[in-house]
Amino acid sequence: MKRTQETLVVRSGLNVDQQHGSVVPPIYLSTTYNFLDFNQPRKHDYGRRSNPGRDEVQQVLAALEAGHAAVLTGSGMAAIHLICTVLLTPDDLLVAPKDCYGGSYRLFDSQQKRGAYKVLFIDQHDPQQLSTALALKPKVILIESPSNPLLRIVDIVSIAQQAHNVGTIVIADNTFLSPYVQQPLLLGADVVVHSCTKYLNGHSDVIAGVVITKHADLADEFAWWANNIGVTAAPFDSYLLLRGLRTLPLRMVQAQQNALDIVNFLKQQPKIKKLYHPSLPEHPGHEIAKKQQRGFGAMISFELGGGETEIRQFISALSLFTLAESLGGVESLISHTATMTHAAMSKEARHAAGISDSLLRISVGIEDSKDLIADLAHALQLIA
Ligand code: PLP
Image 1 (cartoon, helix red, strand yellow):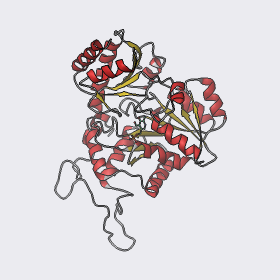
Image 2: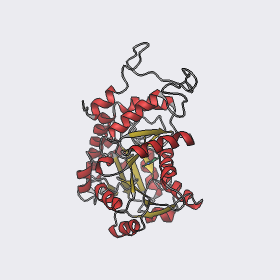
Image 3: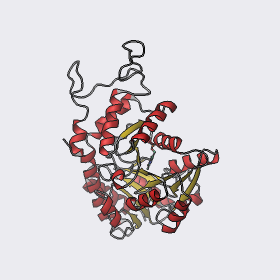
Image 4: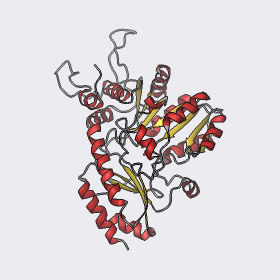
C-alpha cells in the first residue's frame, strides 16, 4: 500500500528486532558479520559495504525522493564527490551554477585544476548561457534550486528536458528544500544529492550525505563505488538520521510558516535593503517555485543597510539566531555569507555571483515565529 511521506518516516524500521521485539530499530555497531560457511556470507558481511541501520535510512530516503535506491555517505561533499567520481573522467565536462554552494564550487574548481574533469560555471537562469553550455554536450549538469545563498530558482523540468536532448545527466542538489518540499526526480532529474546534515537530519548533530537515483544501473554503480572508495556513513549517524527524519514533514511545515511570517516582517523594515525569498511575488522565481515546490523553503537572505559595523551590531544584538554556518536544524541560525559559507570563493567570484559583503542568510528554525520576529525587531532598532 502506498503511504504518505508523513506515515513513511514515522513507521520505517519499526519492529524489525526479532530477538527482543524492540520497537525502535537497534544500532548495529559491529564492523563485521560471521559467515555461515566458506563462500556463504549473510546479507551483511562488512560494515563499509552495508549496515542494517544504514540500509534502512537509504530505503526511506529513496522512497521520499521517489528514487530507485540511495547511498548514504559520510557528508554531503562526499556524496557530490562520489557522483563526480562515478560519472566524470578527465575529458568530461560538468556544468554547474556559478552561484552554487561554496564547498561544491571549491571541489569542482580544485578537481578541474588537477585534471580530474572539466567544469563550466554558468548562470543557469540565462537561456543563452545554458544553451551555449549544453551545445558542448556536457556529461553532467548540476542544478541547485533554490541556490545558496541568493535562493534563485530554476525550472527543473525545462533544464532536464534541454539537458536530456543532448544526452546530459541531470543532478539536483535538493539540500535547501528536502523531498517534503521538492522532488527533483519527478521533475526530470536523474540523480538527487543532499547534505543530510541539514533538513533531513534536522538537529545539527550529524554530518552525512546521500545520493539517490531513479536508474537501477546508476544506483548499482554508486553503491559499488561508495564501498570502493570508502565514503559510506557510520552506523550511529545513520541511526540519528532515521530518528531526525521521523519529524521531517512537521519540521518543514513549521519552519516554512515561520519563514513566511519573518519575510512579512522584514519586507516592511526600511533598514533591510534587499530581501531574497521565493515567496515574494517580485522574486524572479516565484511562479516556478509555486509550480515545482510545496512551499517556499525556510531560508531567507537579506542585505542590511550600513557597513560592517552595523552588521556586527545587528548580529551581536540577536539572541535567538546563532551566528553559525549550516542550515536546516530546529534552531534558527544566521550567517555572514562573505566570511563564512562562501569564504572559499574569491571576492571576484562572489561578486560575479551577486553575493555582496553585506549579505546575511538566516536558516529559520521551528521556534515560535513571534519570538523570532521580536528578536529581529529588537536588533534592528539598535542599529543606526
Ligand atoms: N550542498 C549544499 C547546498 C550545502 O549547503 C552543503 C553544505 O552546506 C553541502 C552540499 C555539503 O554538505 P556537507 O556539509 O554535509 O558536506
